[in-house]
Amino acid sequence: MSNAKQFKALLFTKTAGWHHESLLEGVTAVRELADKHHFEVEWHEDSTRINDENLAQFQVIIFLSTTGNILNDEQRASMEKFIQSGKGFVGIHSASDTEYNWDWYGKLIGRRFKIHPLVQSAEVSIVDREFYGLELFSDTFLWTDEWYDFEPETVPNLNYLLTVDERSYDTHSDWGDNKTGNGMGQFHPLAWYHQFDGGRSFYTALGHLPAAYLDKRFQEHLYGGIYWAATGKKPLAPLDK
View 1: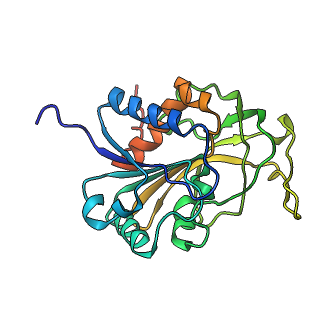
View 2: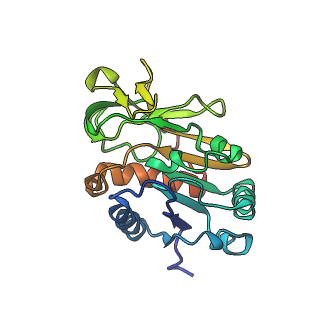
């Protein structure tokens, strides 16, 4: 059919821990991206619908600010088969603070959340401008967010897209009970993508504040990841002059 949408995305926002104030703005932003870029999106928080039969209709699963352990063993197995069939995953913000006792998911997401300081402005830099969705950002730009520190890579060969300069903000975190942090050092990644277990995974740590989802630059950053995860298509090499 000529009016068929180019792909279908499952937007999943279930939380078993912190519930972000920005979730509804995030859902609205993804729905607006679906209208703008002619793809279909279905939003829910029902883990029972993470099953083989239901997932067959989608090309990409988006975990938007999910937290905690939200899937049982059967649902996890269905999601693994989904990725192994050549489909895609997108994790936004606290998707990295999700499913800590599921080793496969840790590898899918690439790095796990560790701790963060207070929300503040900092200088972000683009590492790879060739990836879709970064066209509206300057090479370096000021952004306000919750700057996650991450655990080491769970898999090799992550393709990094954004970093934050720790000289531009206060990296100190103290959550009590010996839970402290002080940044990640000279290289502090914020967004990346990689091929994994037959499929694709994209992650961005940005998106804590509701206002982020009103920013056209951030919206296109999200769509770049969604489009790649759903289709596997990457920017074409420039034509020879």
